Length: 165
Length: 31
Image (cartoon, rainbow over all chains, first blue to last red; front, side, top):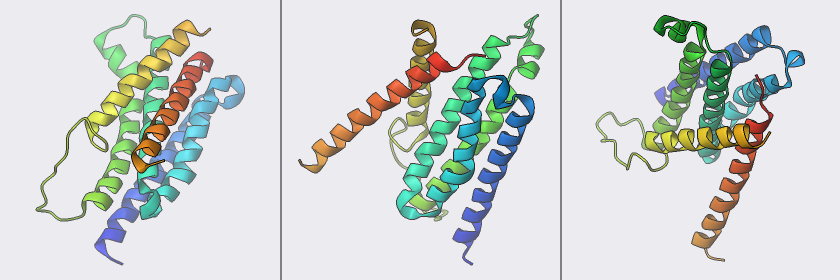
């Protein structure tokens, strides 16, 4: 086994572990039967456990895995932020906002994003320690591109929530 | 159809579908 295969395997195991943890947590806290909106995390987690690692396994489909993984994280971020706002702590102190909203869960979810990004970057930009990182920040596949899409998805989701009732 | 036009068409179709999906998601999710 090469170091490349070993590191990729470890990262894939990390990705699947986080996703299994996510689906178990969601199933325990809010089962689908109580609210059909809970289908969103259920479907997202199943995609994260089965489809994303499969796409990451093959060089031809790794870009699709990267985009799907990123968008699942964006969906999770937007819906969990929505949930936090809907169950906003009362009284809203600094401590209660940090500890009783879903901020912790959103941060854990972004851990999954960066594992996916590491797999993609290691495959696409190589394992050369001395190679310089290049590319425009706001262009695919860099972080700025993701922030633009996070902002765009948030706005579109909000418009759907506010205007289409 | 050349490759650039094909990419542009795909780009628009993908973004329209994505916008429709996220609008529907915002509309249908209730907490």
